[in-house]
Amino acid sequence: MAAGEWWRHGVVYQIYPRSFADGNGDGIGDLPGITSRLDHLNDGTPDSLGVDAIWLSPFYPSPMADFGYDIADYTGVHPDFGTLDDFDRLVAEAHARGIRVLVDLVPNHTSDQHPWFLESRSARDSPKRDWYVWADPKPDGSPPNNWMSTFPSAGRAWTFDEATGQWYLHSFMREQPDLNWWDPEVRAAMDDVMRFWLDRGVDGFRIDVAHKMARDPELRDNPLVELGEGELSATELEARLAGQQRFDQNWPEVHEILRRFRRTLEQYDDRMAVGEVYLLDLATLAGYYGQGVDELHLVHNFVFVRQPWKAEAFRQTVDELWSLLPPGAWPAWFLSNHDHSRVATRYDEGGNGQARARVAAMMVLTLRGTPFLYQGEELGMADSEIPADRVIDIDGRDAERTPMQWDGSPGAGFTSGDPWLPIPGSAREVNVAAQREDPGSMLSLYRRLLWYRRGSAALRQGGYRSLTDTPGGLYAYLRTEGDERLLVALNFTGRPLRYDVGALAPAGRLELSTHPDRLPGGQVGLGPLEVGPDEGLVIRLP
Ligand code: NOJ
Ligand code: CA
Image (cartoon, rainbow, N blue to C red; front, side):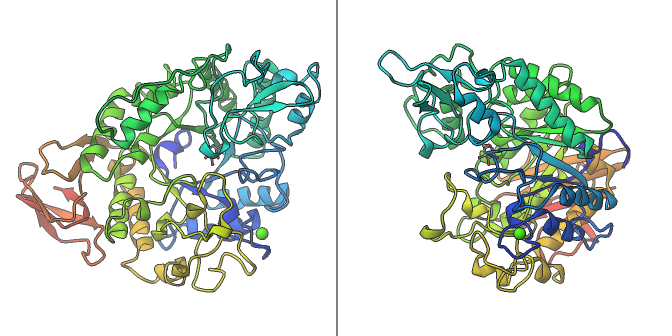
């Protein structure tokens, strides 16, 4: 692929290292395990998934209060995951297969066991005191303001330190104190972290909670927002509640920090950053690319993830984001990650979860933008049931983090030992080995979609136009590049739909269907086009 902008064309696959592949039988996934499974991701042939890059969730030394998002050393590898040599081998093997490697950068907070924090909390006059956000109690001894942790079960965003008589801020768990990005030494220290990994050959970063690093320096109370009368959709409710977070995130200086990250990246060839910007306002989100497209290369869009299974909702978000993006900015599309219920469960209504997950896959892989997939999504993995005595995450996310299902053996090919999270019984049928051989499987659909996309300039980089005269429940769009014209039609309903697109052409060639028994090739009439229940189609127009 042409150097420079691989991240505009490629497909990125997220690996949750703890749950991908266990190389040494201790029940925890590790870096050598990942290396041993790279051929599944891309062996250069359509037998493999065919991804262009992997994003590794954190594998750094950590007490694991938040499974690695509480980092105690930014430039090492947790012994559970292996060593730096293992990391180097993973990068070399990935690059040998044309797979780029992104690592997770968690700049908003460290572990409370990071030496920086230990030093900071040791005394009020510690040289690193100002590296974190310390504040005096209010006169009545209560916390400095009303900010809350993102995790409801963690309560307030402040913890009192008895020894030094001040509170420290943590946007997540109390084990994850927030760094103070107003301090120039913090900025310089994170530059060094970035350079450490860039020098080791990583192709870029996924930036954890990129919208949180800067907040009101005066630490003012968040306003309490009226939720108003009447019913609110989940997204509207979220947006209103987000208004409640006026002072503790998305502060203007965050853009200065992101420009600094971009400048560091630009000292290297061909590197990039994708940011987790969990803000549910698309105009604000678009601002994270920077005015001159000088901030994040890609921005994860959580409005897209959080909406209901409705054609109109998806079309509206996609069209609206495109209308808001500054020139040169490029969207990223994803529906799953390690923090969200899996698609096959989230959208399931009475047993149609798999069919809908197939339509979702076609959408993410044919929209104009960079698709991100989450491990297991290519198998249609559902959320796992976690028995009460195995619940281990503070925020109820175990269900989407259970081990990758490689084969039908008791450890699912993930481990020869006891897996850290239970493997569901369904893994006997839902696994890579079984689905590889089945042309109708979810994995086969993903492989077809990815390899088709690779060969299609229209899908990788072509224009996008949504069609607005569709019947209710159908999301249809054109992707075009030169004389390659593709029509994508996605049926979000359980009914067959007819859509007259005879004006485009009397007939087209069926390239892909999400229905396992509908084989590609052959002509389909367009006046009208018939789309089956819960079916997605890609049709080449003459
Ligand atoms: C977002 C990460 O994706 C999530 O897993 C983590 O708990 C928080 N950020 C805190 O780092
Ligand atoms: Ca292991």
